Every structure is written in structure tokens, then in C-alpha cells.
Image: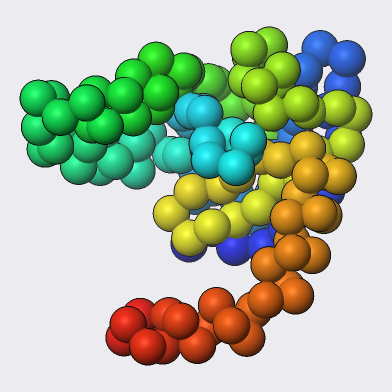
Length: 144
């Protein structure tokens, strides 16, 4: 399970070192895909195959399904993890997520997310300010 928050530097070649705790779980090859909230999703190849299978079950006759599949699959890239535990973030994903020298890597159970550090801090502060309300909503639908 991927958990935790890590602040890392991205070098001028768009390389980022993965948190040591994530390396063994993610493996030597990962999949990066456009994420929600302007993040980048990071999956192990095995987890990506599960996500892909679930998305493929949705009808291609529905516009929302087609659009979301295009969003996810069209921007997905298989990325090798080098011997130093670094990954190369493609330019189009870097630009989409407005990544700069400092990034946040967040473990979210079956995936990690890569965020612009400032955007993550702002998002996290907003969620923390309403955590009680969110928990109550989730509790009312039986999620907690």
C-alpha cells in the first residue's frame, strides 16, 4: 500500500527520485497518467492493468466513458525507474500539472500522485479545514 507525503526536487532534466518506500511496491517500470485535480497519477504496471480492465468494462457508447478513457489512456506513459530510483516526467505531464523544482509525491493506497508542491499545500489545507464534514458525509453513506 502506498501511503505518506514526500517533498522532492525535480532536476532540470525532469527527473524525480521516488520515495524509497514506494520503489519496491511500484517496481522497475511504472505508468504515469494525467490525474485529477491537476495531479499526475502513478501506478505500478500491475495496478494499471487492473484500472485499464475496469475502464474497459464501461460502454464505449457513452460519451462520458469515451472522454474519460481518452483522457487517461491518451496521456498515459510507461516509464522506467532508473538504477538510482528516479523517473523521468514527460514534458506534457509536467506542463499540465505545472510542476516546478519542488514537487509533492503522495501515496494514495493503490497509486501515488505527483503534485506541484504549492498546489498540494493549498489543496491539503482546504481538505483539512473540512475533514470533519467530509467524514460525516462518508459516514452517512456507510463509507466509514
